[in-house]
Amino acid sequence: MRPPSRRQRGGLTAALICGLAAACELLAQSPGGITISQAVEGAVRAYPSMRVTQEQMTAAAAGIRLAQTAYLPSVDALVQVNRASRNTFYGMLLPQTVIPGVDGAAASNFGSVWDTGVGVLVTWQPFDFGLRAASVAAATAARERAQAALDRTQYDVSVATADSFLTVIAAQQTAEAARASVASWQALQKSIHALVAAQLRAGADESRAAAELAAAQTQQSQAEEAIDVARATLAQFLGDRPSELTLNPGRLLSQLPPAFAEPAFAAAAHPLAAEQTAVIAQAKAQLGALERTYYPRFLAQGVAAGRGTGIGADGARLGGLNGLAPSVPNYGLGLTVTFPVMDKFAVREREAMQAADVRAEQAQYSVIASKLQAQFDTAIAMLAGARRVAANTPVEVSSAQAAVDQAAAQYRSGLAPIDNLAQAQRLLAQARIDDALARLNVWRARLQVETARGDIQPFLAEAAQ
Image (cartoon, rainbow, N blue to C red; front, side, top):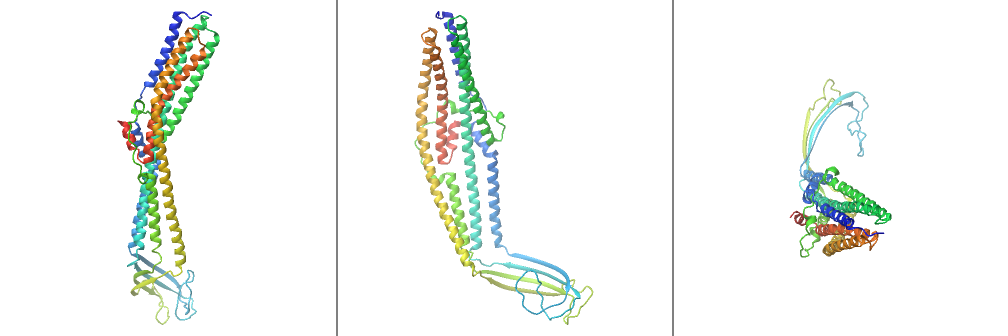
């Protein structure tokens, strides 16, 4: 087999240069569109779960106003007109809701008469041993819990959106490297076809190039599928169709986040811990309200009423329209005291249950704080590791590039088979992917650090600079 001519060697070199230039051009593209900060802001406004928690907070605020209505007196008004028989009966009837309570002389007369009644009863608690104030405090704690849940939901949506944004950018970088690899193999295939046609290389080399091109195209298809999946995940937060999303990576591809001293960590500042604190406060407020239920209930009452009847004082029927309007007025003032004596045992057990709930929520806070600390420590370690990898990937790219140049030269001279060139080309494509993703992984680790601290605004500020 004859070695390739100078012209053929030049064609192979030009094919490699064109392929590498295409790779560089693809990797350097930076489409315009929404930034990561804009994506987070849009998700906080548009994501449905935000509206859910906002309405829950509105309901909790209404609960406070409901609890405050207990300070108002109750006013019951009654108007009744009936026509019934006038038989009455002396004797006791235990409290019930079926037989009407009537009294008077025993009689047996089924003639009916009109009876009317109009009255207003006002009832008010002059003092309640702090029960109403405790109920308002419990409702206020419920609102604070709803606010904490809203803050935590906003935090969750922000973190998920930022992470999805990074995932889309990473998928795009992988796809761009895959497209560059396809472009390189397409150029190489043309050059190798020319060599095979000139009987300077075996036909198996052309088949190998076709197989490598097909493998690169498969990798490109998989990368583009990953983009579609990642865009669909991001689109659910923004309320847009995936095809309508255009992202602007900003500094995420061109620069690394600036180095910083390890930030202080305080679990109490995290939205998840703050929400659990609100849960504990609500449980304690509910316990305080429960502790004030076993007290006497003092009711100041006033009543004004008018009665009308179609029966005279001697028991005779007055007839006509007598009884259709009140004719005898009455009023009364009084103080009623009620005390649920036997409720003590039930109240005691409810207090024990609520106290146990308080202790359980406090223990849950300790679990959350421990997990957040572990998450923060892990994120710090991942950030340090990601920076080391990002510092090493440029060496990987340059070495892979040198390997491709050497393999191409050996292949041109007939000193090495196409396997060496194919392996070197794959290593270069992977090195470029690793280099592109290494920078993104540093940003992702930086996001995880701020996620563990409970505030990703410093991360967004760095990405926007």
